[in-house]
Structure formats: structure tokens, C-alpha cells
Length: 357
Image 1 (cartoon, rainbow, N blue to C red):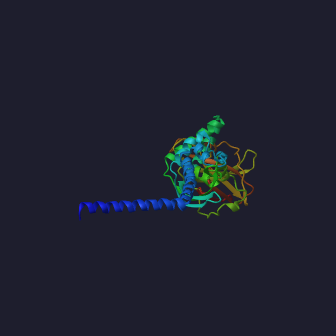
Image 2: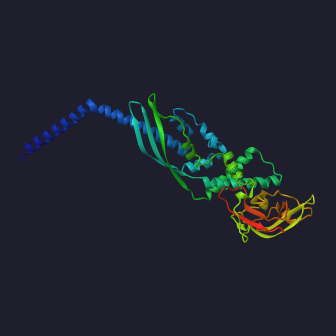
Image 3: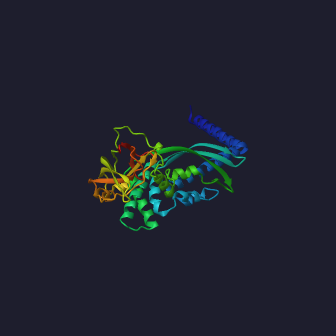
């Protein structure tokens, strides 16, 4: 083939390419413009959710507000997310979050969209439980040491404990799908409002300081009847071991209280397994039941060093014999229930029957 024919063939191919491009432009001009607009708007709605969730990851409240139609982040305050004392803690947890858009139900005519994001985030439930329990123990210890503490100092102490517990824990993750209702406001697409699920993700399942304290304390309220206590066998004891302490029942006897009425004295060895000084009063919760009713705490008429040891702080690794005293109504059996103080519903529990007569 001659050089001239080759050139002519090349020119024909270029001409066909130009014609195809021109045809494509004409098609886009006729109907493609609408398609471009549709997909562009759809993309912007999705992008708004992505930017909002990027703000969640960074705890960037300004960025979050920018992509909310309501611009209302007050729900974050209910779980202390904007409390500066806890900011570093929550920022560390939220940086671990990841997400991807899994669905976009877009309605151009209604100028709305429902954008679903699959989110993986830190579940801090165990961190909070450990931190709140430790915080309450330290607060009780401080109170008996007559150490005063302001509200701000208490929050700072709790925040410090939370960060300490998080630092020594391998994160557990939870996953959820959140569908965000997105609307077009002016020239921008925005999420309608901040939802409860997103707050839960940001707080890593934290329920606020007040609520977490309430949950912990509720587990230490005395049961009014023995019905709520697992029935022990004759061989069961209150012996138990946790990461905070070990207790071992040694003996019990009947004596008289300061009013001359009969009382039960329960003795056990308490070992401090923790990393700081503590006491049986701070770590151990023992309740006594007789005839289906709770026995009140009592004070013996005679001095007993083991009774004093109940509130005595001892160093880690040390053991001391402790005595707790309960009122008696008659000579029927008494059921003891022992558990860790300031713990949640899944804490260890041990029971024992004591013969009085």
C-alpha cells in the first residue's frame, strides 16, 4: 500500500472518530444533560453523608453542623461528648471508627435521599464499667480519708481513669447500619438532623456519666428479700476471687450488739489483689438474710480489731482478717450473699448458709 493511501485511510478514521464524538455530544445535549444532573445530585447527597461521618471520626463539630439541616448537636451533651474533660478520650475512640456507603435511595423530584452507611465502631461498654467501678471505689476511699474533692476534680479523675482503662484494653468493635434522611436545602444537600444511633456510635455506647454511675450503684442496692439471692447448698461458701480482691470465710459466731440484742459476726480474710491501697469496705459487698428478709448492719458491744479492719486500707498483696456484723431476729439460718461493690449486673456472686443454732 502506498504512503498516500495510508494517509487517506488515516484521515478517514479521524473523520469517523470526529463524527462519533459529535454524535455523542448531540446525544448528551438531547438527554444526557438530565442524566448528568441526576447522577451529580445523587453524588452530592451521598457526599454530604460521607463528610458528616468524617466529622464524626474527627470529632469535628463544625463539620458535622455544616452537613446538618438542623445544625443542632445538643444531643451530644447528654452523653458528655462535648465536655472538654472527656474530649481526648472520645477522640481516641472515634478515630477507630470506619464506614462505607452501602445504599442510596435517591428521589430527584422530591429532592430527598435515604443514604445508608455501614459503620464499624468501638464498643466501650467494658471500658466504662471498669472505669466507673474503679472511680466509685476511689471516691469511697477518699471520703473515708476525709479528702475533699470538687465536682470538676471528680470529672477529671473519672476521665483519667477512663483513659487508663482504654489504654490497657484491646478494643472491641460493634457494627451497625444507619440510614440518613438527606434533603436539598438551597443548593446543598444536608442530613435532616442528628439521630440517636449516631450519638451512640460517637459515644461508643456510653450513656453519660450520671447514667453509668446509676447503673453501677443499682447493682449494689440491697435486695429486700432472699428470693433474689441464688439458693446456696450446704457446702457453698462466700469465698471468691476477682482482679481486685480475694475473700475467704474463716468463721462466724453469735454475740451481742451495743444495745444488748443478738447479732451475727462474720469473719473472713480479705486480700488486696489490686494495684493500689484499698479496703474490704471499698471492694466487698456482703449482705445477710434471715427469714426471707435482709439483716441490718450492726455494731458489736465489745471492741474487735477485725471489725476495725473492715475499713482499714491495706497495701496490694496484703491480707487482713475482717469482721462484718448483722442483726438477728431469731436463731434460724442466715444466708450470706457476697459480690464486688460498684460492679454491674454481670459481676461475680457467691452465697453461703450459716447455722445460728
